[in-house]
Image (cartoon, rainbow, N blue to C red):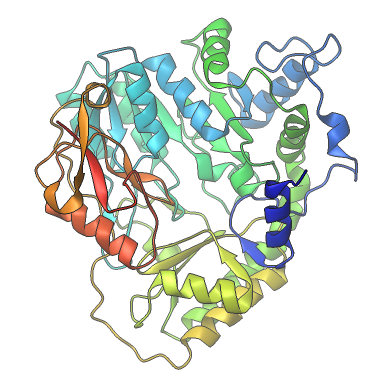
Length: 468
């Protein structure tokens, strides 16, 4: 009997591409050279239970608390998505308001739908020069909290897919002054505690809860993540109850072993990051000396509510050149065997981790210079994706439970969205169920598809689901 998945992945691996995409281990992580199949046991008398830990899993999670300085920390095998579901389930019931960063991951919206909560959106700042969002202003949070004093919590995304982080300390003070809880989707910042060169973790900055995807930037298998609780408002049984709702009842102990090693062996990763960060600085200077492609850096700090930036989130901008980020990513993949994490009209986004080598960083820089060397400067670039101000007609849960029909996108303007429509990656909703569709939404969707991007939540024939 054939194994299509095994065969397909083996074929991909044989291409030997340099990876700047997830997962963070880049295929190079091992645990003492041991066969992980031996570790893939189930819940037995001698193996503890992830969903109700009593022995060594509990001991390991207590070590996490010491590392991160939290009230409790929990291993997740369903990715940050399961952690986001759990956070929102802890703070919001049906009809409860929650203040939401509109540049959130779609899992936040799905959690709101599941709980029947009512979102109150706040908008991130937008960098029009480079075509991506920055951070969330504390003043924006304060205004939303004053207008909605009955909201239970605030949830923001920091860092963003582009490596920009908000001023969590200031936001936390604002949220707590309003008597609310601060939840942070820190999926892309699991490595922040490792070195001083990185932004401070949301846990350290005063967040009450946050999730981190260890698989994105460290050495866990895909789906390996953490939930940190930094408030005493919830009993341990309440936390375990919501975690059990969103976890599989048959967790992979092999994946759990890898996740534990990835997190608790961070001291070794700290040493490995030193040459990586040094090489990133060198290669950034090299690329930017050409004054064509632009490797984004800390000069963006202070603008667009960007409080700090992750150096290992390599964002290279091509606004001055007659080529899109999508096209650059395609060339890098086919000609230079380099896989990027994401591309948009203006940028490529690469994730460098401690499992990359300095030669990987050099190869990326040399390839970008080679691609752009003979290109003429062109400055009349159009604006890339930016969020349209949402017009909420009905709450997401009610929209999902309402009758719907499928219409051509050309006929969808003025209709109410039934499904989440995302540019993927990063999985940020262009449209949320219950929002009115406008011409800008249709333009963003069609432009992204025409340039080679991916949109989820629409049908193959350029049609979209709307309320009847």
